Length: 411
Image 1 (tube, rainbow, N blue to C red):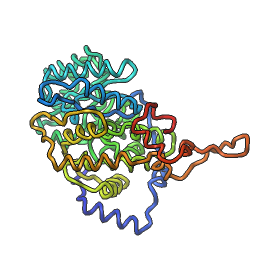
Image 2: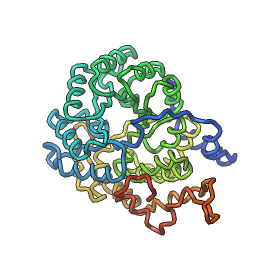
Image 3: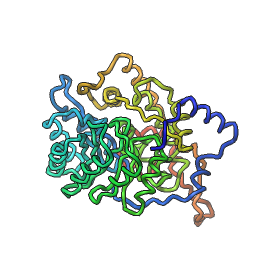
Image 4: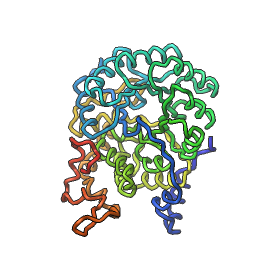
């Protein structure tokens, strides 16, 4: 590990000092070194699908799940993560687990990979859930070693190796130290990632030096690196990352996918502008009410300088479900015990955040980036702008919240 996380007050001070010193933009920093990103068939944006329960908490609200999935698929996401931490995978019953997986497989169809979460340190349970995921048609599993925070690196490696040797499905390792309590070294994580059945990792950490070490230690092995948040998407991909498995794509799939594709098309400033707008969800994702502007300054400053800050262990499930409801996707904010239920104060906070989300014109947000022309001139002597989709007119970008496109070809 890389030591203690930097206090937020220090990060804010650094942000001010960097601004006063005329610190170079993130684009200049990114251009200063070439990043080697190995191609991956698992690249892209994966929303961490919520598990909607009936109002009485008895069973899955299948119509609500179907509507949520359709909302995310219309945004052009590249795959779906079920039963993750946000998806309450640690708390659902076996019957609910089966219903969530089978419903998602049916709605997503054969072309969209579905990844299923496994949260346990009990090998028999993990093996049974791995087989269930295979039998129901999942493409891969995401395994979080949970419930034994004192486990050594060797113990976790042995657990993951036993699953790898089953050769049932591709496995992603879920690195979430603030949730699991595990104190693994970068070498420990690299050993897990190097297992033949492990195809990649979800990095739920805001310590980019740690992420950088994982990538450096496993480079050339064809592994996939996905961030646990889209709020650091561009910085994460600068290191060689391949995308994100993230809560932001649950509520704003279209804009999150658009930021990813802009980055992949080398429109990095456009991607950064879109990423910055995703901070509008801060009031929904965080347990404490924090200004999106302050959160953006703190996180971007820390990530740009690779300074470790606390990931936290927030519980936004009820707020996110209510946000879906506010977006026109009927979803009861019911969550499983011991997760916190929605309060009246949080309802007001979510409503305010959703109102701001619905006012954003994503074309205008992306257009804040300087237009970058292609080097090839057109026949009429003009230049084709990479940001040509911006000429659609005012307010058109709001339709990205209801996109029926693939997120690749403009708004």
